[in-house]
Image (cartoon, each protein chain N blue to C red):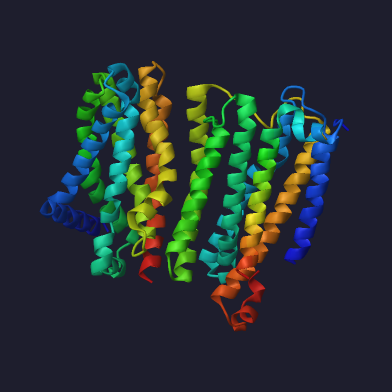
Length: 222
Length: 41
Length: 225
């Protein structure tokens, strides 16, 4: 089981290293989207400071959504997803491996770049590290929950737009507590609650999302 | 009975727009749903 | 059977509206504008109840592999979305005179908006999958994910709301709710309930007809209802 996990993870990472454009595109998308906001609301740092955490979180969320179709689609189209299902290994474990790889490829780079964008919005060092922390806790939840939508829409017309409609409502709590923690901290409020809830959401989605995804994949392959 | 006249009833104490705006749209939704169900029979 | 429920719904509506407009007194705080609650609160209740019932049927359909339960879930979704829309619309029309704004990011209204998105997602997924059986099962999973998430969403919106705005005026917990107001609201809720049953029965009949032209299947699994 552990071996299967590692082998799927390695295969995914190797594939991603060979096809770097996908990763780079997502990263540039994040940079450009978040740089648009100062043009829209004006360059006053005081305003930017307030909207900064929210903008970065929404940017990370859109990136996660944009990259979602990569998780299962190619494997679904070339039939290797069916092989995985028939391999005899527990599908949930393989699903977690695939999502981990997906997060390492598209989520982690966004998290690493986020503090630099935060600088453009005039966030302080304390806010930036907090932003980094909440993104580290929250973006895996986005990947896990988003993958449910990706698995449900496998081979269905409508693609990314449909996945967004299905998934965005479920992103709301992550957004509230992720961006909310940074804003609350700026206002001098306690953020322990935010962080524990984010952690709880991570645990819950690690436990439950793979089950939903595994059943969704089985339905799609029937 | 709190209404002096018909026009008093429709005015809803100055809130006519809000009260009737709510009720008419609700009624419209119901009618649309029913028409849609009949049409596809 | 649908006709019977329609009849009951119609009678209850007339009765409820009679209480609502001719028996219930004017609210001393909100004046006549409060009379919107006779449709707002029932619609909001139904929107949530229908989501639960829909997910229940979807789950049964997924686990027991019964087509009729999946079709029930399918038939309930549009009515649920309609109720959510009505709750939002009337909420806005109630909010304008009460809060002075058409839209306020109040916890209830916001949760209701997200509920509308959940219904839209469910129906969109359903509509874009060609194979009805796959559509049944995929949308069932989405409905179940939704049921797990609804309390989380509601809780987080509440938290977010109190953090940013402080407590807002509560619509249903009015301390001066006269008995006749409550009666009117409950009768209207019952009317909405009967209406939803009638409409979804009509719709499920249509879905059965669309999907299974032949009557053989009907006699096969009529015991599953």
